[in-house]
Length: 207
Image (cartoon, rainbow, N blue to C red; front, side, top):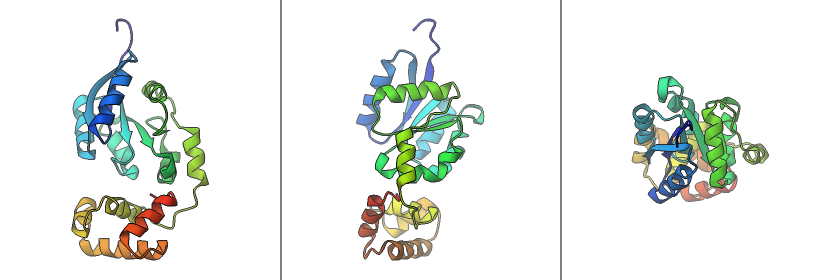
């Protein structure tokens, strides 16, 4: 579109159908140019460096939230901007990083309409704060989690059905360390099995 400054946008979301649908809707805005897509955290880092987007729309389930600032640094000139979409029922996950979002990392509830995502992309590209008030309220209302950050990471990976060895590889720790974390998780949640611990943690909004 002549005369309009296009916002170069990367989509890092799980599921090709979801990425494709959002890409179509955002591209129809006229001032948003979809320059790439990513389905994994590794692909996101590569795309930030290679495609050099102004903003990346990122699924919170795709990356460890405590690594957001590091991932953003992979963007153009070390100053990439991320618009992170989070399920409202899992708002507790963003609570520890809300105060650190600044003007480079924004948060929206995953169930907002596409138009709200488009507006978030524009605002973030201009260096403005993007923070969904409903998401903030939900995060603050969730009871404090008894799980440590590392325990939440272990449970997040365990929730995908991976065995202990795979969890250890993904988190770059030993299998024994993973077993110790899982034992503490089950003690804290009162669960008898790993699956029950996942269910309890999700229902409580801890992961």
